[in-house]
Structure formats: structure tokens, C-alpha cells
Image 1 (cartoon, rainbow, N blue to C red):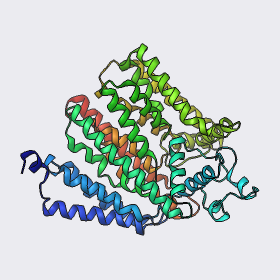
Image 2: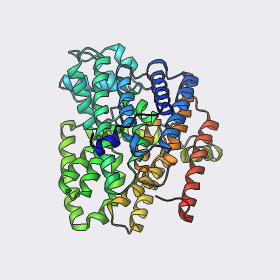
Image 3: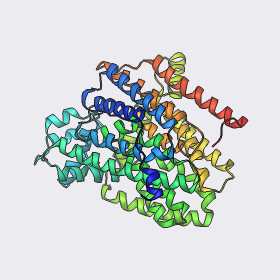
Length: 448
């Protein structure tokens, strides 16, 4: 056997085999047995899975990498047959996909309009409408996600479960691509390749991105692809990949200012022109006379009305009640969004590095600021800081991915009442640990 191949084909120890079984069992429970209101089961299964994951990844060696990557893939495949019960977003995915198949633009009308449409749109039944989590709002999903919804409904026109399987396969492929790109980038930047396991084996990423169908996984793939192409000086393919990342989720827009210094002003103009042109082409099929108004209103509502598991916003909200006797989200939300923009632009102005390897650390800062100021922070929002932290010395996103499951307490009752003590515990531990890491890095106690 070739020495290089033998290095990869190392049999797992009994300890590792047991840990893999624990991860499989925990993910199976979360995928097939848990319901959104079953906080006790969710917390127990996630805690066991997270502790096992952190224990194994923290001591993983290169010789064990292939074994754990195979386990990571197996964990995702195990969830193929599990219907996404920890999130009801699937029903909006199906609604939008069936509209596209019928030649209708889901951005044109609110869902209730189609219940009385003549002729009736196939598959848009009252039963499906009743499952939508925000039927009073226009859809907010960008074009890459809309394409995936349409493909899933085309391949499985009669079955929501079948369409969910198609979407899971797409997300599994995206995760496989992300893992390969992470390995390439870690190697290029002379970082330990075992760090890929912080993302690949994370139980929250497996259950939320694949199990519950959240398209952060697709966004992360295109973001990593664009970054890898930048390191190879392939500017124009990178610009296309970055446009696809934005067309999957809008969040990568906050990272773009950090590219200017590394590209140079002249190349930046051409690069962002390509990003803008491709973005317009991707969004063009969604365009209609009412698109800008309806999509803009949904974005506006996101900042002015939705709130869940927030940090800084909840502190300001409490002050608003104390001073004004009411929830000032309509004022606080947009102000926090403006604050994010100003902080990121200031950090960009202070950035003097030109290496591509310094990007993930800056992007981690940007996404941390964004999530700190967000009015809504769902568990799967931790995917982006988690994947970025593998290139840095920081591991607070890893801790956060374990603590954020406390937010599922909100779903115990139909009233969706948050426990602010649990929210405070979550953010207190994350901020405390992150501050400790920052202090150790400043004093030289934390490296690499």
C-alpha cells in the first residue's frame, strides 16, 4: 500500500467508534423524534452531540481526518428521510416553487391572493397555506434559493416530502463542496486541516442546514468558492461566485468592503462591476412592476417587526419600555442596521493588511457586529461565523453553536414566549469566552 494512502486509512479507535455512534444516535433523535416544542429532548440530544463533537474535534489528528469526514457525510445522509420539523420554512419553499412552475412570480402577490385566484394554481391549497409561517408577508428568498425550490417542486410535484429530499441533496452537495474548499484554503494558508471538522462535524450545522433546510449552506459554498478563486488570482470567476453567494443569501454583502484594499481600486471597480452585472442577471427573472416595493417591504419588516433571540436589541428594547413605555423596534432596528454599516466601514478604513489569509478574521468581525445588532438571530445564523472561525484562533462561534439551542425554549408553548434569562445566559457565556480569547490573543497566550 502506498505510504500516502496508508496515512489516510487508519482504523478508528474504540473511543472514536463510540463517539461516532453517539453522534449518529443524537442526530437521529433530532431528525426523526424531536418536535419544535420538545425542548427537553432537543436540549438533551444537542448537548450530548455537541459535547461528543467538541471532545473529538479538539483532539483530532490528520490520520483520523478521513474517518471523521466520512462520519460527517453519513450524518447528513442519515437525515435524508427526516421531514424538517424544527422549522416550518419548507412550506414557503414549496409555495414559491409551485408558483414558479405555474408561471407566476411569488414576489407579485401575497399568498392569500392565490387562494381565490382563477384559475386555481395547482398545489396551492388551503392546507398548504395554513402551514405558512408568515402568510401576511411577501417572500424574501433570493434567486438561487428560488431556483432550488422550483427544481425540487419540478422533480417532486405532488409530494412535499419528496421535494424536501431534493433540497436536502442540494444542501449536502453544497456542504461537500464547502468541506473540499475549506481543505484547500487551510492547506494554502498553512493551517491544520483538521480544523475543517469544526464545521463539517458540528451537529447544529448538520441538523439545521441539512435537516431543516436552511440555505446558509449554499451561501457558504459560493462564498468559499469565491474566496478560493481570489487566492488563485482568478478574479472574474470569483466575482461570479460572489454574486451567486449574494443571490443565495444577502449577508455576504457586508464582507465586500474588505476586498477593496486587496484588489486595489482599479481592479475593484471591474470586479464589483462583474458582481453587480451577474447579480442583476440572477435577479432579473424575479423582476416585475411590484417586485421592488414588495421585496423592500419584506426587508423593512425584518428590521422593524421581527425579533427573536437578540442581544443588543433586547437591551435597547428594555430601555425603550423604561423610557417610553413601548417597544421601539421600528426605530431601534433601522438604527442598529445603520450602526452595523458604520462600524464595518470604519473597520475597513483601519484595515492595512493586503493578504487574502487575513480576510476570514475581518469577516468574522463583520458578522459578529451584524449578529450583535440583529433583531432576529436563529440557530442557523451561527453557520457563517462558525465556518470563518476555522481560519482564526477564535472558537467562540463553536461555543455559540452549542449554546444557541437554548433559543428553542421559545417554542414550548404556542405563544412563543422567550425566556430572557436563557438569552442572557447564552450571550453572557459567548461574549465572556470571546473576550477571554481576545485578551489571550492580545497577550500572546493564544496563537494560530
